[in-house]
Amino acid sequence: MKTSYKALLGGLLIASCSLLQAQSYPDKPVRFVVPFAPGGPTDIIARLLSQKLSEVWRQTVVVENRPGAGGNVGTAQVVKSVPDGYTVLINTSSMTVNATLYANPGYDVEKDLLAVANVASSPNIIVAGSSLGAKNLKEAIDKAKSGQLNFGSAGTGTTPHLSAEYLFKVLAKVDVAHAPYKGAGPALNGALTGEVQFASVAMPAAVPLLKAGRLQGLAVTSAKRNSALPDVPTVAESGFAGFEDYTWVGVFLPTGTPAAIAQKINADVEALLQLADFKTRLSGIGFEPVGGSMDSFAKYVKAEHLKWAKVVKETGAKPE
Image 1 (cartoon, rainbow, N blue to C red):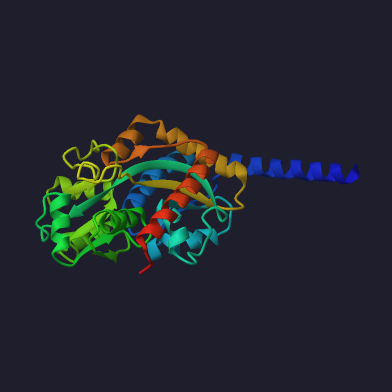
Image 2 (spheres, rainbow, N blue to C red):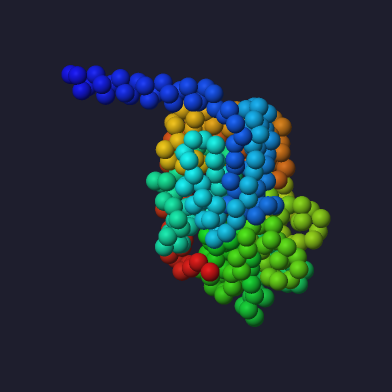
């Protein structure tokens, strides 16, 4: 009985400490780590979140870009950080790809990180530079059949990378070489300058360039056309029925972070997703808010892990 009483008392003390931490959180600046270069979808959403949460928390929220290895470099840094809620990872679905694509990505996506909040989701998009001279996906694939072409992505292991690999190699059966960049912004610049003929990225980063007529939108990977780019057809409309992939952006913390702090961040992000102006800013860049509980997000991350493991196997994709 004495041992049980001590254990119960210890549990209550831990719970009380965790609650006190959450009530005072944050009492110093918070660091948002984005494992990609500036200008990409993860970076865009991280900066939207940092602006709004700094107002809610009345604390500075700093965004740091730590690109490399398709997001693995920055993610591994967060995993190794002190689990106190002051180092937050803003990452994308690439995490669930890299878990299979790399023999050792530097972290275990389900064991080393807490899935805190599923912020937003967007289709991927395949675009072409003027050097390709293709107006749609069919024309682009026909050109790829007659000569070696390249496509750029935000990095090996990102969902746009695997979407394009699956589309070109498995479905269209054309060999289009992959050129990994350190973010969607650099990949799009590669298509603009002619370093690559295609780019496959999460849609938001491409919207301004497409609306300005500097790139040609070939196809989006959603089930329906996106309201931000209504003239760009879906991959399914382009002759590949059933094709549907998305890039999502979420908030993660190192395992060991007090549960009450994780729940507070989830609740604060959930509140932001209900704001009309926040929804408008997301939709303006091609994203839709998602939200939900920590438990539902953890289950979704696990399902994505299984899905992309299958795609990696079918495409034979390897880290460059």
